Length: 232
Image 1 (cartoon, rainbow, N blue to C red):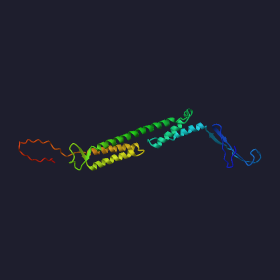
Image 2: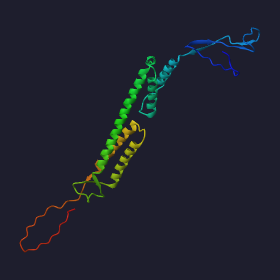
Image 3: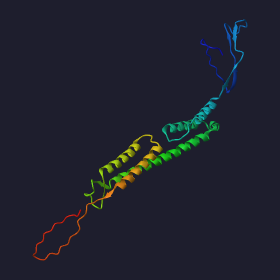
Image 4: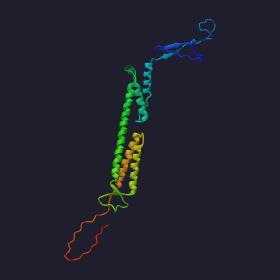
């Protein structure tokens, strides 16, 4: 091989292997055996050449080895694992046999699948808690002192209701947030359940008394006047 004017050379190899390369420089005709030969590299360099298929296998092995520890069901982790799986599946069946760390990819896929399932479960738990809280909120009426609420119904103050609504809204905002973590969802379920417990403890029975049925026996042609009132 002969270098170009910039001293660069493109060497091609027919097959994989380890090659030793030495270099000499001639001022003029390289076939001239006179003193024109003025630079010789006595110590050759060694180049290891891999087969193209081996390079593809090595690339997949490196992709798998470089996968991070999977601690959360995050989109970046999902993409990295999908890329590694796609690269592996693009190999021939013969090449796949040389990917000795495929079990590591399968292990991380299983971990991610488990984390995704746990995340979905936590999401469903929070959605269920929100639904229950909304229904619970509708079972009461706001009152200052409960005297305007029938004794068959429950009431809370406006402050009690506002606190409960704030907890429900915070949970709904987390549901709407993209890429919520399992820890965030679990914490919000706990917070909403505690808010529900506090709200239930704040409920009071109405103080308004219903009129009792009154029966009068009045003699014929007699007159009677009376006043009905609630005893409060």
